[in-house]
Figure 1 (cartoon, rainbow, N blue to C red):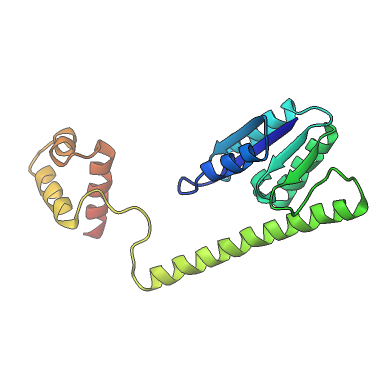
Figure 2: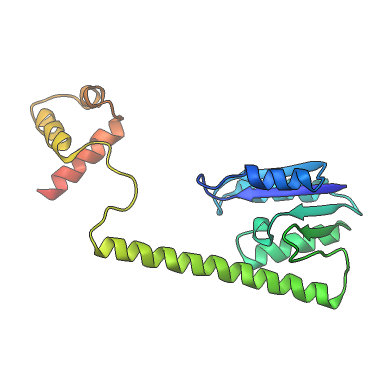
Length: 189
């Protein structure tokens, strides 16, 4: 049986393309998740897949790094798939473990190393980009719910005795947002 595994790790990434590729290659069952890379939900989905597969099954993924976020987790996943008597096939052609030979084993390790290298390079480039943006004074992260002017008005209203709940309703924000805004403005003084 062909069993697929698809995973994306950020909300911006799209799962549909992986699912389509796995369906086109003939996967009869597909396990998938759209979770943060550090999420235990990814591990749970992979564990469900490994519990499901039987001897002679073929686990198919679009890319090797879909199996895990680190070299160790990828190699552990491959070992678990093999221990169930199944093989692993990467759609991009980089690896097919249906032939258990020294070359195939070396390829598993090399692919895992390069997948880890790629992720590490992305982290470094992202950190450099953030540092550059910060040095240029650009805002990073989510924009504040209230403008600076609204924050000042909110603080003035609070000092005049208006309640947190009333301010939250007035500015259409949550109570925690009102608290954070007040704290931020009070820290500036």
